[in-house]
Image (cartoon, rainbow, N blue to C red; front, side):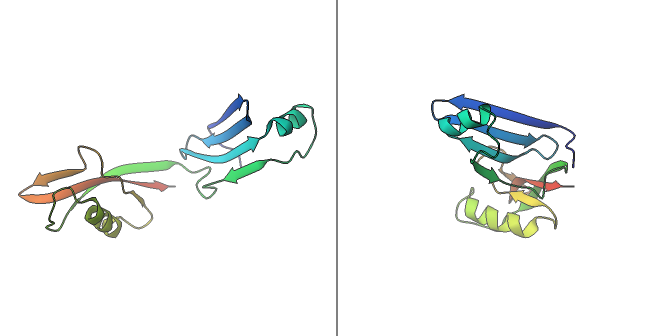
Length: 128
């Protein structure tokens, strides 16, 4: 598989090197590599198969394009206007199939009133 638009970050410091691989289309960092100073010296000295710590995430999303949109949903009557726990529960329930809800409700636009009813707004994402 070839990525359309990838990025690499290499950060060297006293504790070694951190390398990250990022897929811009999917908007995900899918590989994180950590090298100790000794491992970095070995790799730069052209020692093949240098041991290191590798963290891999979101391989199912690599090579796909991330789409996102905002959805609004009505909240049941609650004791407090900005009840994040209830918004999370309702948000999960109303999220369309195939989409992943971003359950962050800390923005000024996350909660609002429309027609005397309480509503919440959240971002949903999918990779296609």
